[in-house]
Image (tube, rainbow, N blue to C red; front, side, top):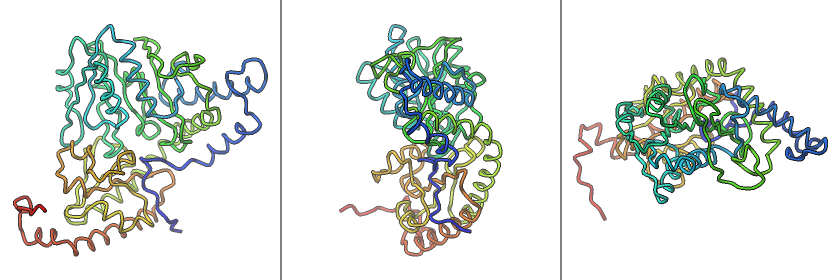
Length: 405
């Protein structure tokens, strides 16, 4: 049975797993206590539920439960991690290294810190979306306190060489922060093996609830501290005050456990579907995969269809297939994706890209339907396009002088 509409925007958010919801429900009604209420059973119940979830979250990334700080999501985690390090290590230096393809929550945080005296280096990426490790090492100065490079990209799914990055950071005594929002729960992420000092992720990208996330802060070798960005009762080891979102945390814990136990079989099935989708769509003339195809997430494909406008493409089938042409965070503007531009794509190709994010609930029937719909829409739009006609006649479109009104 084909279930419509088809949801292929799992990088923006995932549906909640019914098993997660089931775990959460009692914490809204019967077990409604505040985890910081230490003098009655309602509070104790909430506290022990939070402790258990903290273990589930920690286990997924190979951390100690004491190293997990609950946040409202990855955006807050990016802010707390980067701003918190900038303030805490101000005596050591003010230089931060990041990359141009990071999520806006990292880029805009760095921009904000520049106004407060931070010195930020934005590394360019290679055409396949990976950073250049030699360039990273060369960018380090005596004042460098933090390297912030995402684990895997939200638009193209490219996985950065995290172990190599952390080795370089260690060699120079610099802390390494990674926004692992798209990676955790999809691929094996282990803070010890990967040498990560701070890491953030969120529940709603891994079949958990929205509005709850975690920041991992390493406790030994080295012991890392961040200054609070939210002050109050000193919750979460004084790094993040505020009454804990107990139902959210319980759901987050369950989501982490399910990912830990089911990641392997999920990945096998989902990546096979992704490859099927990609192989079929690449049969369309002038279709290109954006980003490195070896080092990328198992569930993501970003494909450009030359001489077709991505937004127009989405209009062709958006009632039945949910996709995006960039990231959810910036798709309100008609600017082409800054991530694709950073790979060196021209506006035309950047504008004609679609991001496919498959998930736990994606079916084979849905993939077949998607291939058929997209192929037909691309062909139809190209038939209507004078550009396509000119391209087929062998005219070099880059050489055309466009009239500007």
